[in-house]
Length: 450
Length: 143
Image (cartoon, rainbow over all chains, first blue to last red):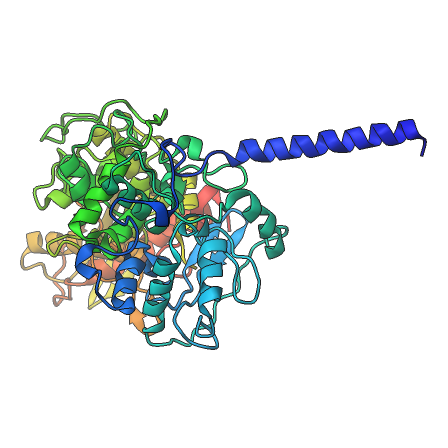
């Protein structure tokens, strides 16, 4: 090769490398807490109240008790339990466009669970997504969020998990297609998208804000559902908390945008929604958020919920352009008045199966939990969550008088479910949906556990 | 034409099958010879109710069992024909002096085969299992 050719080759290689690095940098985007631009210090140098760990009331508790609180705050159980399966024994299916992933057994069973994990092995999983045998985890396990957790908190969770009865339950095989079944490739993904760094308090913010940031990011991993993902399936924090569709359900915009986010919610509404999964005038949590409330958020100390709210308030506003600027008021009390759909089947299904609980106005005569008025789901022109809840219902466990909605998916066809979803969004929302039977079939697939 | 509980009944269902395989009922006509008609109005009412119940079974009456347990639990997953889906029903009671036959479940047995034959006439698909499998008759499928 002549010196000139070599120079050209080298410059081409350099340009390609620079372009790749720049491209990676651009797609990587900012970290989850980068919007707070105050000075960050290491936890040991922080002078405010400790934002990590458990609430004061539990500070003197055993590692197992502290771990129990933190495991609930991190909501480990919901994903690591199959429908009708033993708690923490894994096997829940995650349907992805390129195959199915299954959650793993995290009981201390030595053969099929994590019974052989050393403290360091556990930290490698939580902070770096690396299994005890060296294999890389997929980011369905939210280690890019858990990476902000302190060693002490992660090991308290381990102590709690190791206090549970071991369950012998081998993990189902994932069915990912090539190239997604190449776990080693996730090491490159991790270099780009897992910051592998612990939580650093922001000294310009209050201790309450820092506690909220730690809870929301390192433990509750809100962004894993509420922040849209980029092409590489990592969180795009340029649109932090702007909402996304995850596992077939829409996680709505919880940024501080007033029209389409949580910016106009009163503090007590946010506290109520997080504590009991319902706030009057804003609807009721169902699906994955219902589970997050039942098994995680409802069990948090009141001061922790207030801290999360304080943190949420500061997340920059990002509007959701597909959502209407105003929520629809209650529909008329008579079925003859108000909006509907050209397809008569929607009203037929609604009056046969829905109206006795939800009412013609959308304000439930039975329970505020069943009121549709004001909920984003009925104001969402994609009707994703309306269709999902008709298909699979919702089973809420908190508060004690919560009522559940039965699943209608097995008795009603895709055509009927699309028709009733379109009727519900037209009647109770500000812009009706145009769901088709095919859309409903697709939504069924995304939440099916078969 | 079928013998049923000591009576004789003939039933025609007029129905439409749409692209998605949903069945829309338009009209049901039954003629019944149940022997001497002591209370003709009750006979008509019994047949109307029985036909609706039988058509419900044909359209929605599926019971599935998983691990030994019936999966259906209530009306959200085990449907009934609603009042707005019920077709016009015409019942003709034949004057007869014979000994009275049964009428309580005569309509129930008449609905499903008549609907099955209507679907065969509409689509050419000869269903051999009930309840009706919409996937077999969707999209203008032919046998």
